Every structure is written in structure tokens, then in C-alpha cells.
Image (cartoon, rainbow, N blue to C red; front, side):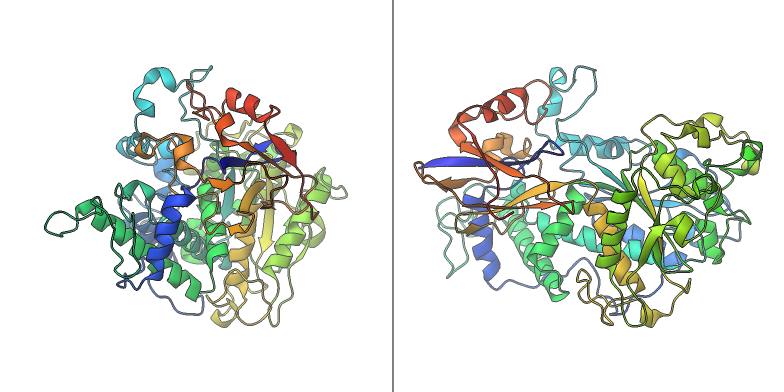
Length: 610
């Protein structure tokens, strides 16, 4: 028998799937964990506290408390900051506003903080720019995640690319932007995003357990279901039968894995859904600003101190009115986030009607379709279907902002969509608020910054809907039309779909009669890191007979609505180089690996069922 390596590509994205380098070795760890998880285990308290069945609109103090809990409970996946400490922005409001901000460590001065929650897998992507930003976290924390590389970063000759940029070779993450409340009296969005973030982080943490780097060497060899112990002389106990510290940690993580999986399953989030949510955390960087208009949300007012943030962006603003943009901290916060990231997909939640709306929404383009009108219509229709309706509320209508809502000058959606490729509509802002002296270069954009499908979601006819219309925590991912659905429940799903479609992906689910119980993306996994092992030693491996004429491989395509073309690439494991990454800069896959995959030893197969 010869092991075969499986890889997948999507021709439209030139994506090399990471099945050979993104999961634990199935033949050892998976069987051990599976057997142990079937045994009765002591109960471990889940990190997420029990919550009431019905969602409820969260006030500003509760939002801050929940965000702080998420950042502390899931430090490897969540970072909480403010646009004040990240970008040096002022606070809107007075000493009477946002007294709850005193609970945030770096809060000082009058007014309100504008909080940002970043969801990303720091262990899998330790060199990500947000992980390494000294403005987001103390430098020591960024160094900690790099230190887990296991020596790769200790040799300075190995981490410069041709342009002199430091990198660990892992792929760059696509960015997703989610804004909860530009208008402070429109209340559904912030709660939806906080609840969504908790669901994502809980799933990612659960799916990461037990973490392979804590598995004691030789533990569970000869595992016997009758006693649950580890056989052999390296079974994890000393001569007095006392458990070693590393064995105890491993067993605790297995118990935690069992407990959180059961908890999620009890809330109608079984394995496939849990793995999907974990993938969204581990393969994307999602920037959530729950209350962009923090002052307006705290006061329950539409504006920020009398200025509408959704008229505050420099798109389709008349040149004579250049002092009427970037007047608000809300607008400046969003501007800085877009300047420091590249968002292909974004959502901004509002209220007052029920519709998903896309470009155009500017008076200059009142009777014109956007260049991407078909793609936007397809995506908006999918948002509507997955959100669905519930008693008394239809699934979201969808169409252009000009047709379904109304046009505005200075709107955030059109600015984020076209600010980089329609420069004639962009002005350099010169606001006089907060002492003036706004740097004009802050509203000069290159040809890449502002090209997002940034859609407007009008969540509900009533801006602050009653609790019995928000939905239930049961079956949060099921697109039902019963009373379990509601304004919050359906917008959790809508936001998750936005994260999913930011980038297409392939997932291999099985070979022959073997169905994989783990996804091919495991949170907190970085293949160069563990035990000094190579990609071979840390990847999923499936043994198949060498001389068979056919092999049955099952895979799915996600992050897309139509599959124009997909294929699987397979061949002998032994034909590949020992290190699938580049020896010099760590780029995966290396040129040598790609050349091998293109050789006659590997074959390409198209699916038989599409």
C-alpha cells in the first residue's frame, strides 16, 4: 500500500487546498480522541454561560461586558480594541456620556469609546498584521504567537521574501467588515453581531480541542475502552501511578472538547455546523464594529451629536461641501478600518424598513446600474433566503438603494464600493469638528482600498423591535420561518453568510468509505510548529491500495453560489518533496512542490455528479 495525498483546486481562484497541511494525523490522534470522547467523562463547565432562550436588545454597558468576556475567554481568536487607542481618534460626547467605558482599561477622557472586535486565528496566522500590530496588543503578545513557530523565526535568513518583508509563509487572510449601528437608534445590528461573535468563537475554540501540541508522547497507545487509560510504558503515569502534568492537561482538553461539543449540539449546532463556524474564524479576519456610532447608540439617538454619520463619507459630496464629511468619530473610525484593511465584503446594519440594498445609492447614479449589479443581486438574494422570514415578516426584499431605499450624498455604502475606482466622485474632507486640522490625506485612496460589496441591511420596520420578535437561540443556523426565527436570529445567519462568501474554498470530506469527522481546517493549527515535524508528519493521511484503477473522493465547494469548475488532484505521497514549503521564505506551497504536482505522477479528476 502507498499513501496518497489529496489536494484540490478551484480554477477561478487558483486556490491550492490545504488538506495536506491543515489537519491532524487521522490515523493516530483522531481514533484516540474518538474513543475517549465516547467514554463517560467528568462534567466541565462550558465557557459560554447559559442564556435566556429569547434574544434581547443589548444596551451599551452589556455590549461592552460581552465584548470583554469574548476577548478574555477566547484570547487566541479575539482581540478587543478601540479606534481611539488603535488610530488615535477623539471621543464623541461629554463627561455625562458612556460612564460604562470606565470598565475598559485604557478609557480616559470624556465621551464614548468606539469598540472594535477582531476575529482571527492568531496561532494559525501568527504573522498577520493585526496580530503583530503594537497598537492592538503589547508587542510581547505578538512575539508569543511567533514563538510558537518552533524555531522558524529564529533564523533571520529564512523569513525575508524578495521584497524584504517578514512572513511565515501562511496565506494572507481575506477581510470581512461588519458594522452594527451607524445610526444609534437602530438597535438590531449590534446585538446580532455580538451574538454571532460569541457563537463563532465558542465553535472555533471547541473545534480546536484537544490541541495536538499538548498530546503526551506515546499516550493512548493500546487504549482500552474498559479502563480509559493509556497502555504501554509511556502511558502518561509515573511509577506511583500519578498522572503527569502534561497528561492531565491533555485529558482536561479532551473533557473540554466533549463538553463543548455536547453543549453546541444541544443548541442544534452539530458537528458539520460547528466545523463550518470554526472554519470561518480560522480562515478569515473579521473586523466587527458593533456600535460605530457609539455616542448615538448610548443615547438612543440617530445622529452623533446632531450629525448623521451616514452622510459623512467623501463620495458624491459636492466640492463646496468638503467641510461636511469626516465630521463624526463614527465616520472616521470606519474610514481608518478601511484604510488599514482590504475588505471585499462588508455589511452595515440599519433599521426602519426590511430590505437588503446594494449599489447604487447616490444621486449621480440614480438611473444607472452598478458594474457588478448581477453579482450584487445574486449575493443579496442569498442573504434574503438564508435570513428568511418569520410570522408577520417576509424574507427581506432586495434591490439597489436608489430603488428600494433612497439616495444620499456622503453614504458609506457607495463610498466603500467605488471610492478607489471612481475618484471623480471623491473629495478630500476638511471638517472643522474636534478642533479641525483633519489630515486631508486621510481621504486620499489608492486604487485598491475601497472596492467592497458593502451592503445595507435594513433589519426591521421598527427600529427597536419588541423582544418577542427577535428570535430564539434554538436552531440559530437553520433558516426556518417559524417563531424560532426573528430579527436577531436571521441577521446572525446573514452576517455568517457574508463571512462565508468572501472567498471560495474546497473541503475534502471522505475517501472511499472513510468519512472524515474533522474538517480539513482545524483552528489553532500551524503545520510548521508542532514537534519540529514536517508537513507530512502533521497532515491528514489516508492509505489506499496502490494499484487500484479508481478512487472515490468526496469534496464540497463553499464560499460560492455557482460552481463553474472544480477538480481534485491526487498522486503518490512519496513523490512529493520532504518540505512542502519553500526552504528560504516559508511560502506554502513551494515552487518545487507545485512542479511536482504538475508532473505525470499526479492526476486530475473532475466530479462525477455535477
